[in-house]
Image (cartoon, rainbow, N blue to C red; front, side, top):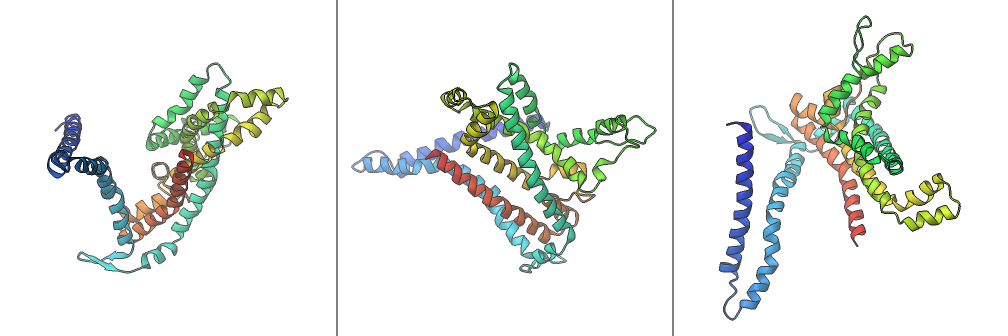
Length: 335
């Protein structure tokens, strides 16, 4: 069957199934379980209204349980077991974790992830805030915002392919199609460089890709926050003789501090899970390994489900506190 037809059938069946579920479940609730007739009609209506919200929540809860809760529990189980030749699993406790922390590649991934966490959220948030401030002051600011936001529409793999061409290296006797090498030779470089194979620096070249993508996200959120600052506050500061830098750093930034932290932590979560960029550009070679790519190597290349699942649990443990903090902040904002 043609993929387009499969997609249309999936949408049709999914939508019809949802409509059918909500209609039938309400009919069962109102006509069979709690009919609105007889001496207990009022009580039945109240009971039905108490249960009705759960009917709407049930599909989402079932999907979360199936696609989120169950994989977490199963991954935890796999991280504590080991495959037995011939089939089945054997309980090994924390042996997989011990094996994982004994591997240099794991610590390389940890170091690189920490480096990503320091650089990418800071640069993405800073550039996003800078662009949000500057584009609000120029006539063609909306066009500039659209161009800067455009990389958000590109997948991580697509962005990686684009930047891999930027870093491309050809023999010295050939024309360089990689922009970075072309500029390097133009300004007096002796020979083209294999940028993605230079230890330490190659990590920064990979980070540029994610900064390029996430700056647009940070810009949109922070621009909305800046527009929410009362004009009276800015006008009062101008009348008091504050300079543009003082207005920005001492008035605007403090008032959107919560939004900046939310953007920062959101990008941090993305960084902790970064996989596509490293996989597409270096595959973790030349000291560019990260946790998600390490997990992929263990699960699908080494076929070591125990250590791979253990590394997945490490990623989840690193992400969970940030998620909890974001949820608490969101609740405080709503109160």
